[in-house]
Length: 55
Image (cartoon, rainbow, N blue to C red):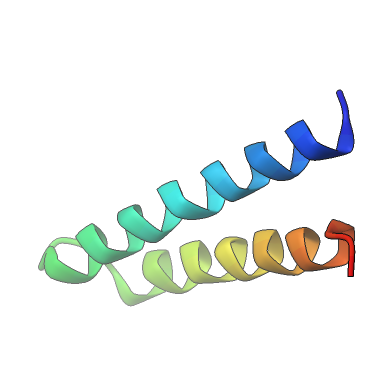
């Protein structure tokens, strides 16, 4: 897998997780812990994207 395709995949995962967080925050059945875990995963993806992106 090339770096470009890997970055695109990470960006897709980050965007998907963003949508999941938004939906979970609107749902009364979602726990704060679950939302916090998703936000942590989202941040980890963002950090990985930043680290791998050319400057």
